[in-house]
Length: 113
Length: 114
Image (cartoon, rainbow over all chains, first blue to last red; front, side, top):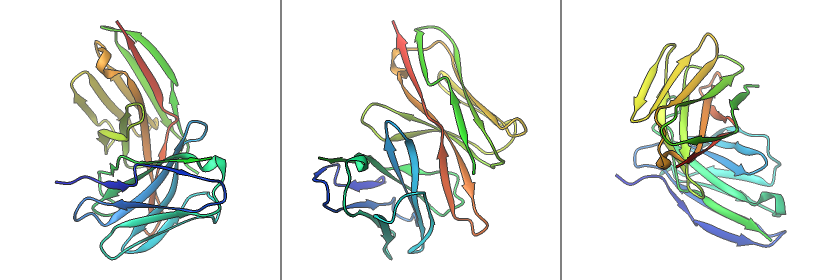
């Protein structure tokens, strides 16, 4: 059974550019959430999606956006990149919002230079 | 807003010793998770604790939950080098519409020395 797939694994971007990260959940899982991990702020919640709807958003600026497709795959986009956006971005999938298990992908390491 | 506090933040221990990591959270939640993270890697699920008094064990790790005290512990028995990693606890915060988010503690970096 395939796990949560995040692409790309590594990314280097320049300040001001934009980036799109992808997350394919475990087959059959319909709920996806995203988290940003930095040494200074730790793990912080970004978004939560279920049935193609963003139902919850963390305390991040509007430069951070995302969506979920009908096949439950999710993308997040960061526009006008800043140095502080350098982080490990993790997505987690679950069967539905009130599942007991949340499985994380390997993450996308974004470096902004 | 739910807050999750973990301590200690860093733990250096000798092989063979026992120790406990603590996770306190500020408001009611019906489930708590423990994850392990190796350097540069993702989060590996260790335990899901769903009810007051829940205790789960896997190898040298044992997790427990006291919902009344809003406290979970991760106990390490006879530590070995392979347990060196960062351990996170996380609590789920649900909204009325069942939307949710995981709130993580700061993590405990565990180093097991020979």
